[in-house]
Image (cartoon, rainbow, N blue to C red; front, side, top):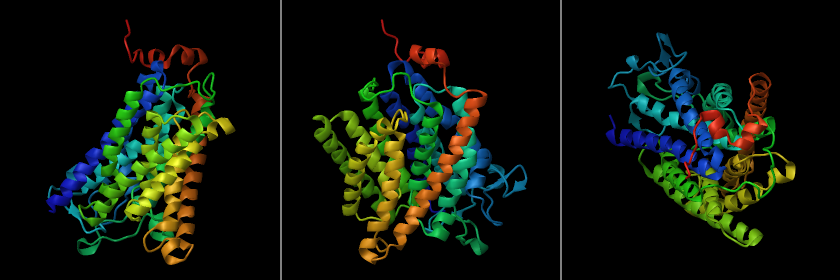
Length: 422
């Protein structure tokens, strides 16, 4: 066993898992005082639900395996559903295309964090007005119908070929179409952003929705969440190499450079538009840069990562105003940051990726492939999410009553308050 790479994958898995509680802090600080518990519970609910469904069947859908792969089995039904840990000996090893060798369950654990954070990201679009039970049903349906298959389109490779070799026969967007998406710009951020857009349409606007009405109730909480997200993102990006090598180091340095530049880009827009550079803007800019560099972190030089980050910071800072122009209430800017940032990062590869981008190759081919990948995932996630959301809204109801929204949904939904003030 390659203990070094096994350690790296397991540590990266822990870092990615940390991102969901970090997101709860980030989102929790952005909402109203009377909604902070509800907002954070949407993330923790996703963590609990997807943590179970991933083991039961999600991993089997996303990584269906091959005849010689012992991972994707469950209750004696080989290669159909779930992870049967009893069939995986401690000495069973997994060899991936990058050449690293480690236990299969380490890879399953790493990818579990991706599934959890993707679902949790969507919740920011429906802050202050969603029922917890309806959210859990939505998370169950969306992850099953959308995320698990999309993860297969992007991340999957068939494992365990003859004589222990790895057979690349999966992830059709990557291996058949030729999309470059190192760590999930399409499967995570475009998918979540499109779903958030759909849910914002389904649930409608918050009472009193207008520019400048809703202010973050706890700015330090926002900054804490953003800092922990950045910390966890090193596992997200560099860990996607599945080996502690030079490519992981490239992804790591780009995960420093791009969000740093994005903070500067976002703050510049704020300074020009509003006359002040805000801490919430810095936190949002960092997240925008992290989103944009996710698909491109192993395809760009650090210099181009800085350019991408700055561009994402500027464009996402401008994009969050779209909800006021077009009248959809994306509460915490899932569309402006994750959908737009994911698209920017995915398309940027087509222009500036080392060796295959337009700048070096002189060909538009890679840009076309990137556009196909972004467009397919966006359309599939948006349409499916719209249908799922409308069904839930018309049956059990997705949105709380207006009077409950005004009173504060923490006490109505959870019977708790975020702060006990004398």
